[in-house]
Image (cartoon, rainbow, N blue to C red):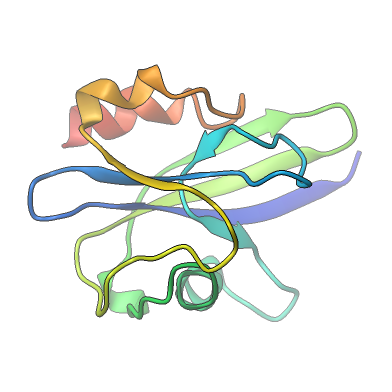
Length: 132
């Protein structure tokens, strides 16, 4: 089974809310909510992938020094195994906005379970909640 490396981030605003993005129609797991991020390219670090993905998908800029490693997910789907480090980020330039037709929502940590998520993301919720 192939291993897919995806990097994700919990963007945390001044009020302690976390940004979730809803997977758009036409993508696998459409309609589910997830932490922003994306696939790590061959020549990238997970941190560099997040800096790139946040700029491409949300129109914001951050720096690797602002990404704190928090935890990771390791989950087997039917046709691949996902390895996903989750970083926390409290500092960026710009206002997150949808650039790829995904809905965005700022969510209080206690309410994260109210949003249907991919199976790999669900075990990250209590760790993130406890950390915040």
